[in-house]
Image (cartoon, rainbow, N blue to C red; front, side, top):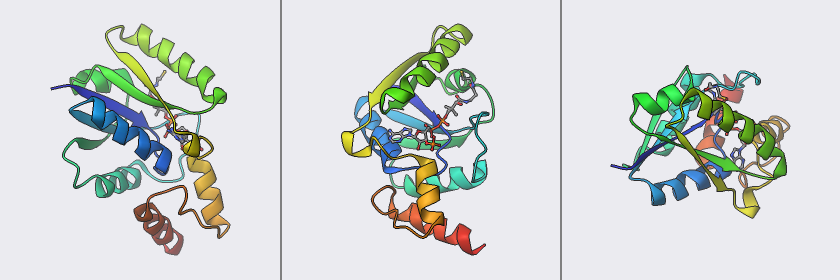
Length: 159
Ligand code: COA
């Protein structure tokens, strides 16, 4: 079975991420969404909340599995026998960060390869922080996220 991991903060998941997931399922038998943490960012939602949201969204897709992971991404790839990391690549600004992360991962585990999928033009400007800000300020985020993410954001607002 061809299996890959797609790690990210998914804080929250956007249509940009979902496009990458869909395209990854065309390339692999199983795509494991790894809800992780980027230590240079403060997450808005807990790892449990982000994981539950992804589980809800992909509950009917047998090709997608969701896990929470608090550790090195390359260790996750090894633990789940998924030697390929998928990452989405947006505009030029993503490149430097992704390049650095890829080089570090290669040193940590040379067996693990990273494949970058170019984000669709219409998603190139979307980011999780933008979604959070627009929603917080009362704007409509339906062009950026799945309706289930809007429900989640609404619930979080009322808590
Ligand atoms: N289209 C649109 N937007 C996209 C996108 C796409 N295809 N792919 C990502 N984005 C956006 C996200 O919305 C997010 O926006 P934000 O900056 O406003 O938060 C940003 O790009 C990147 O987020 P995402 O891909 O969800 O996660 P990340 O870059 O924060 O994830 C980890 C980084 C978790 C994969 C990385 O830190 C990691 O591997 N951590 C584990 C520990 C480890 O192994 N460290 C060593 C690595 S060298």
